[in-house]
Each structure stands twice: as structure tokens, then as C-alpha cells.
Image (cartoon, rainbow over all chains, first blue to last red; front, side, top):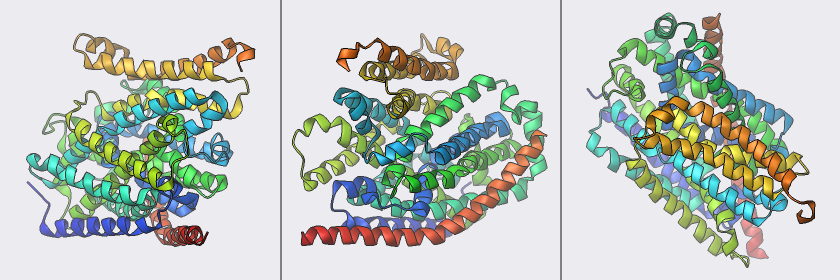
Length: 487
Length: 49
């Protein structure tokens, strides 16, 4: 069954060794907390594009976008188009990102302190970390399942393989922080892109465009090409994704950390514009792999889940050598995502949640120690949560719902902090509570056997849309309700 | 109509992604050199202070 040979193994081994060496070598340039978290704010455009693209494409991304293609046809790539447009609009206008970068803060909640006070900064930090950790919690197992299926690795080795990979990533992230992340991201971007492009070309040649479109037409009709007429999508799906992707562009910690690490706001805007079209590719390329899986394998998937269709296809069609390139590419994608997620969410824990414990300024040495410790703790969390959380529903929706826990409120707070003079702490508190309540309630209802069918009848899109709308309303009503003398 | 849209988008993705990978791979090396140089001088300055 396996198409993974010693030649492929050598390609993968060389790649991992090279990445580790590069990641560890740059640790000597990290002397301050600012170097560790933001690489001294010295990042320029091309490194920023490579890093952002590599971070935002992990194995988990490949899996859920391929699942979208398999289950929804070409319409499954709609979120990518929306996100690309959001990146482009924000990049050209500088909406929120210009005042955010110019403020010189390390994290978004730090900006909120100036407008809404210390408590809101802390609360914002908590919801950001909660949403982010729940989101990244599923990365490890999903990545492992991909590798097992593509390479034919024994399933019993999944945990140990992913543990070793995570330890490798944690080592260079703990030692070199953002600088190691940027340098390894660059290598990972090149390897990942080579793998993605070559596999896509192979699939297009072997399966053929006309077969792909015929499959989509026979399974989904016009809905496979147009999300508005797809029975599983429609306007609630599109609208939820407009809210979700616009808020991702404004507040997603891994994206914002690149903006804050950029040399200036102009560089940050260029990175946004330069990376925007990548988000179409991010959804469409694996989406095509998913459609190809439906074309070649049909609906009879080993393991039962549509999530496994694309890896099973790759196992079947990739030749020796290209299999190694693909596995190296996917490891690259996963390593860059894991390292960046651990570092950037760790930065919120250090900078905002631990802020009340830093009454006096900590030394750089102490700050570095705590940042490294936090990254290590997040790594341990990823290991355990990622191995036992039972994922229900489709992956993209899970990620969207957990991300919404903070994106609805934090995007509301960010826009208000930048552009609404009357916004205050009451409105901010209301937005945080309301924004988190909807997705958390939905997740709980979905997990409980008694309420699972009720949650299914509501669906994730309406609860997601409600979170954004009511979070905005809470900000307006709360801000207007606060007595002026307390401002 | 829908098929043509997705065909154009797919071709654009493959062409754009191939081009940007090549371009960023070349230019990114310069960015890494600059960032390391800048951080090194920053650390050296702190040592002499």
C-alpha cells in the first residue's frame, strides 16, 4: 500500500535536518524580549510574505480545504476568495493595521489598554488565548493522520511521530523565537510551495480538468460552482465567511504578529497586499486535490470521513521522489504553522495575561525565560489536547467556530479603538462576553448528546453570524450606556 | 460560466504561485541577511553601552 520509499525518507530527513540547523543557528541573535517576540521589528516585505504564507498553510489547512473541495466542489474555495479580498482591501487602505502598527505595541490587547483600561486588556488576552488554543488543538492529530495515510505509516506510530516533530519545532522556537520562526518559515515556504505546485500539476495532468468539472457537476450540480445555490452553503455560509475572514485579517494572532514584526506600517501593508492572492491558492489548490479524490476514489473512503479522501488519493497516485517532496512539503507546512502558533499565542500570555504580575519591569533575561517557558507549556498542551479531542462536524467549521470565540469581539474592539471616539470599557466588556458566548454555547451544545441535534438544526453559520452582529451591538449599547463622568 | 471562472482562477493560482515562489525565494535571502545584520549590530551596541 505504501508509496513511501527510502528515497522519499532521505528527502524528508535532509529537509528536517536543514530546518533544525537553520532554526537553532540564529538563536545567538536573540538578546531581548523584543527580538524573541518580534525579531526586533526588522522584518522586510519578502521575508514577511514567505513567513505569512508558510504559517497560514499547515497540514490541517490542506486537510480542511481538500475536505471542502470533496464535499462542496469548487464552491468550497469561496472562503479563500473572501479572505484574499479582505487582505487586499485592508492592505490598500491600511484599515486598522496602520494605527495598530504605528502604536508600537507587541500585541492587540496592549493597544486596548490605552482606550479601554487594564481589565479589558487582560480579558481580551484571555479570550484570544482561549480561542487560539482551542483552534490549534486539533492541528497535531490531523497532521498525523495525513502523514499516516499518505505514507502508509503504521497508525500506532502516529503519536510518537507527531511528538518527535513537535519537540523538534519546540526546540528551535524556544531558542530563537520569532527570528527562528522567520528563517525556518522561509525555508518551509520554498519547500512547501514546490510540493504544492508539483502535486497540483501532476493531478491536473493525470486526472484532467474536464473529469474534475464533470465530477463536480454530477455530484453537486450548479452548487458545485456557485456557493449561493449550493444546498449546504447558501448566503449564511458566505456571510459567515465574510465576517470570519475579515476579522481574521484584522485580528488573527499569527497574521498580526507579522504586521507588528514588520519594519513599519508601509511594509506591513505591502506584506498584506503581496500575500493576498496566496489565500485563493490556499483554498483552491487543496480543493482541487479533494475534487480529484472524489473523481478517482468516489465516495467509498477508508475510515468513512471525507477528511481522509485526499491523503488516500495522494498515496495512490504519487510516484517515488514526488512522494518525498510532498511529505517534506507538508512537514514544512506543519512545522511553520506549529512554531508560529506557539510563539504568537505565547506572546499574548506573556504580554497581556501576565501583565498584572509585572508590577515592576522584568529584566530581559527573566522576560526571555518566561517567554520560552510559555512556548514549552503550549507545546505540552498541543500534545495532549490534540490527541484526545473528538472532532465532530467538518474541520473548517470547527476552526471557524473556535476562532470566532475571540475574533467577533476583538475585531469589534480593534475597529472601535481605532475609529470610534465614544467607545469605552463598558462596550468593550459587553462585546467580549457576547462575542465569546455564542460560539462557546454552540460548541457545548454540539458535544452534549442531549442537545447535539438542536445544535445541528441551528448550524454553525447562524451562531457565527450572530456572534459578530451582537458583539458589535454590545459595543455600541454598552458604550452609550456608560455614564460620561466615568470616562 | 461557473466552470470558466474556476478554470481561469486555477490557472492564475498555479502561474502566480510559481512566480511568487521563485521571486520570494531569491529576494527573501536578502531580507534574512539584513535582519541578521541589524540584530547583530543591535546586540553589539548593547554590549558596548
